[in-house]
Image 1 (tube, rainbow over the protein chains, first blue to last red):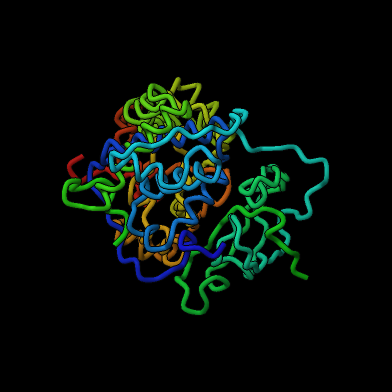
Image 2 (image 1 turned 90 degrees about the vertical axis):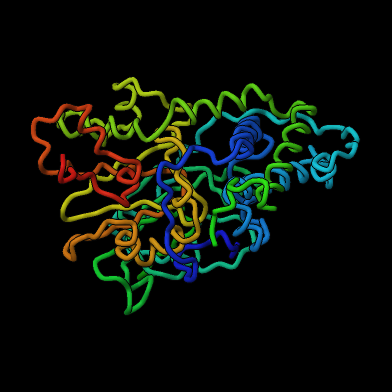
Length: 214
Length: 209
């Protein structure tokens, strides 16, 4: 999806603010949210791709103002309502001190073993050194193909293994494992004639994101 | 502008207040419904507050600087290298690629789509790494961003930006700075900061040593 999370290349966010001696968490609630996410994802209520897609669906203004763990919290609420663990309004009601009626819970999911690497029998479509183009897409679902590389030409720099495909896994459409490639893009290809000199980009892209360049 | 609402100034910031209230409400509901166990939340928090942090990376790098064979093993299998040093790590063994920075090539890591980071090895990422300014800019103007962050790279150093967009994670193996001959491994480790492991800083010996 072309969401606010897809930040690569955008202008206007100002300078990077480093915080000296930054604590691991800035408030207790942040650490509680992290711990909840580890369990909700670990126990299979939502896989990591569905959780990320939940973050991406945070309305753009909220995305930029809630902060990192605030976005996690919003995604947790969204996903658990979608899974039927929470009814809409439950969290707001509890936060306001109102009574929250018990909800009959859906069946517990199966806990998933951590790890996303898979074996594929089919050979990979591309080889190191191949010229490729990142596909242009406007699908509304989850993807790990950022806008700033879409339509740009690159070269396969190295091969990874095959991995669970986030674009299907986020939506409950199965793991559909795909080969993963590390692709190099030149500065001018991404940013035009005014690109910063002496830089290049490397990014991990799944096979369905790529098409050959003749 | 960016991610500075994370819990600062709790009583006066309505967003931080709302995050705190709703997180607390969410936790109490999920405990009631048997979805989360508060003791397991405590355990994950303790892991990141006490056990796992950038010091793991500092130790790996310092050993690699003094032991070329370990350096080879670190690049071949970072998790096995971490085991060799008996480092505390998380159970999530995401594949990690170690990138060597040299005078000729400087690597720097980002995740433009979220904030992917080798957390089970290096701990949680800093706020700036998760912030829109870093994520939006470092893929487009890495030299400018690095300069602002205090690292002015020579014009003849090639900059490679790594956008960790899938389940592979990246860690930088910085170059050993000059002026450290004969230093002990522990002393070398003090030079390797979290920022150097991401590639926005280089280990340096200060003028006063």
